Image (cartoon, rainbow, N blue to C red; front, side, top):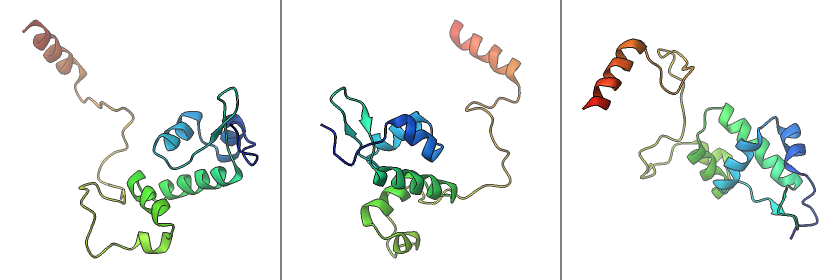
Length: 128
């Protein structure tokens, strides 16, 4: 059942945060926000959820990845979490996503320099 403070449907939250519904649901799936549900199972968001989404968006723009954001939300102390710990976490993933100016920005998940050669190689693999 919906919380009395949960008043915003996802469409209103999208307008307030400039995030897509998919992004909002993604952050929910990672436990960063927890919207309540209406009787019709529609997600309803609180003003606090909207603030958290804006914080997530801001931290992502500053280069933090989702693991870093989760650590901040779990600890509740942003300044302490942004300074490197004496004993780094066991995860091999960095907390900050620093830009790599030497690499061009990708326009595809699968950039291909020579698409014709790749196509021929894939066809030969299918025949094998």
